[in-house]
Length: 428
Image (cartoon, rainbow, N blue to C red; front, top):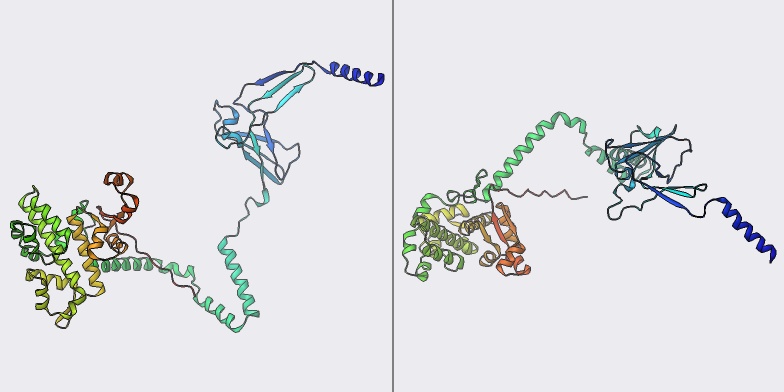
């Protein structure tokens, strides 16, 4: 027991002689100048004698060194080391924890903590590879194909060899195409013009320069002056009621046409504006009548067609047949192409009557056709077909499901047509 007590007292005496029993901690104020830094070498570690230099992007900055954008760099004979301070964004969410170095002086019992100490995770780069050109993906692929073809020619079957020769024959020499690049570009421009002409045959001729939606597809692009003047607008305005007015129409099953005529007659617009609206509504009724008659049209002669469209002026009937049908001897037929053209005219007239913001769902129901197909037709006319926004849905008191079923086609000017999609050739 006495021997153990002697050892303990000797240990306490040694600790007392080693220095003060209390430790004074001093934290240095954050500094904007360089000081000690923490460095981590995850892979290659240089010798202790390798010099490093600290660079800052803002030499005159008064911010503490840990918040400045700094770079630590050093090099040996073969390797370069570099890193930016990782704790520069330490105050943000998910930043690294902060390491603080401290120096303890056992003689004075003081501990000095350095608050401004950036952290660097050193990456390295071999000097010899700095300027070495990397092999591109294309060159590697070409090298692989060349080696594969060599093996195929040497050890392949007859079928494999013939396939390799076919691929070689179909290979395009890009350098040889340089001299004809200009001619190819001109040909592309010509083909684009031809495409535009084909598209314009199926839709009314648009005005690409105007900033007014009403002038994108003007009335003159839809119906000739002779047909327009042949519509009895005065008689439509003087009709005693909706029933009498509907009896004057070539197509009497469109609630949209009846509603637009009723609103025009009862509005406070000028007589000229009213006549323009009822004429446009009458023209829509004529287009809808031809659309309904299209499946049976090829079996009817012109007098029989006229009897199916009572009250339709002769000039307008001639215009409809020349614009939307193809002659079939003494009869007429609505082909797939002319049917698409007829639907395009119907959509444009709908836009004119609905202030260029047509309701696709109601229109699809009147035409008895799928809503997506009609929406695509509106898009081909340069319209933007969208679901009402949350604010509009709240104002209208409808749900998102109802909104999707009642998309609206809006025409804006200057008109922008969708890009033509090209299908890639099938792989063989």
